[in-house]
Length: 176
Image (cartoon, rainbow, N blue to C red; front, side, top):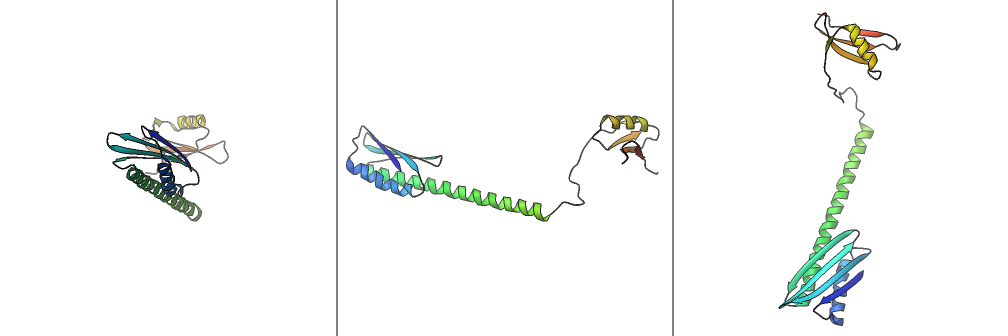
């Protein structure tokens, strides 16, 4: 772990330096490579320790103040360790959930082929027209195979469809 220790209005002694490095070993065990920026400062009677840890694209931060610098550092390490464990648990849970969902989706695709079910619904306007006009309208839309319309002569719903020969059309009318 790369560690940068800065003291503001405070001289960083060898003892403080060793203590910070020893405590950051607790954080280092969670990551392969990590960087820590430690800022120690004094304001009035308080000793403030601020620690930023950057690892795997994640940033963790803890700031505490206490009358004793060592206690402040300890508290920061505890806070950072909690944040890291929480993030790691959350990430593991997300990975587990997403893998279960992927397995379920794969099983659904492999085992169940959809048959005899309505899988798509289309809505369109039915206009009154003659069957000949319906054929002309259907010719305008080469990707469509049929057209539903209201027959002007009978007032009933009819359908015109392309026959398999590709040249002729069929008309579907209700009986009654």
